[in-house]
Image (cartoon, rainbow, N blue to C red):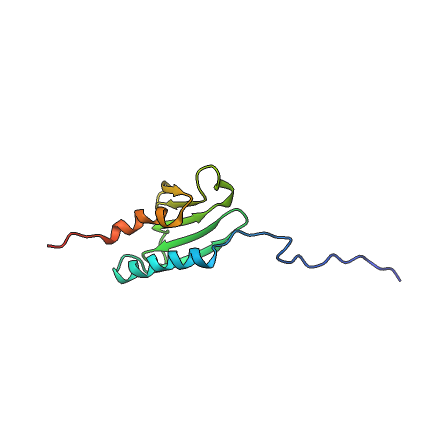
Length: 114
């Protein structure tokens, strides 16, 4: 009889992922709710990867995202860990404070009243 050493199942400690914290998600979802009420956004998706967490916003489900809100902790000390990415992949705003970065999207809610 031979015994083989079994490797333990890799748990959450061995694979690290970047994810949004509850307070970050509440800020993002607050903006999302206001944009849905205004008729601008209709769907979202969240991806938690090893280096980045992404909150994607869609006008329709089958389309490419209108905006991506990214969290990259490795850029915290350089450019800021939060970024707003536009539909063509351009960086619209980057910074270390999520509320400040999201202000560029809140401007879409301000409309002139006739």
